[in-house]
Length: 318
Image 1 (cartoon, helix red, strand yellow):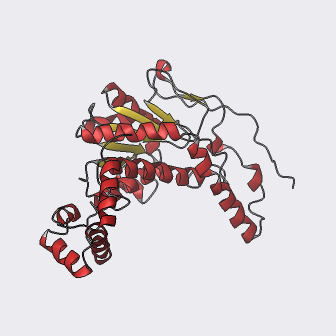
Image 2 (cartoon, one colour):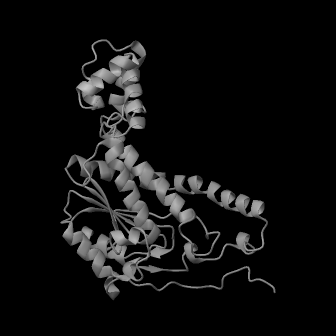
Image 3 (cartoon, one colour):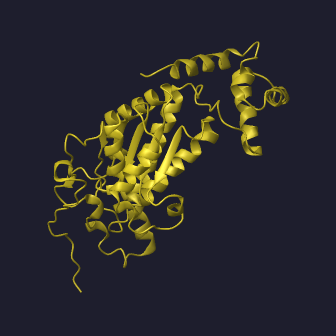
């Protein structure tokens, strides 16, 4: 049987809200198109299929670099929110929502940040983390209600994640957040969106990754790219809050044996102490690295240089 190698022309007419506040896509989102390189995916030898998938993933960083300026602007908005006592709130459905929750959940142990500082909100609630909640992403109203429940304000940054860019739940959240004066960001992988000015987020990041190897499976390239962008945004925001010295996580919460050993090594790097002294001083100060290094009386020249560079890097926005 001859296999179709090209998708017929198609237009996505997904509309969000009223006619005056409609988000449309001028052509079918790349995330929904068929990838001509994987037409024979079900017939490829395993090794060829593995190489094909990895080759597709290799293109992701270059595509993201094309949006470096928008990503940098996003980091600055997040830092501004944090300095105002605000929050970073991710909104998404399915894979996009799960990745937001994942990134948010990793911030407290990595940066000793309050759990409410970075939050992930997924369509369908926590149950959707483990199983698909059919239709949850189709409710614009639920996105709006979630923003209201969280009492979003001008101090907050609301970050919508939607692979195709037209998820009603995400637009419900973004629209309500914008009405409340919060900074709004959209990450999607559809460069063909038409967003009315009244609804357009402060920052729109739309890398074109091309079609997925498995048609429509946005847990693949779109999911990998989403994780990369979220990693960049929260990591560099925390750096600029002074939670990193040199490349050391000086606000890590040493909650297990591996992290306590890491904390000892960090203190050694920044003070020149031997392991026993570093552990003793950490234990005296409740395993809080910043409190521990503050009492160091004679750092080595090398560690002092690292301290200075780290302080300068974390001092503010650049």
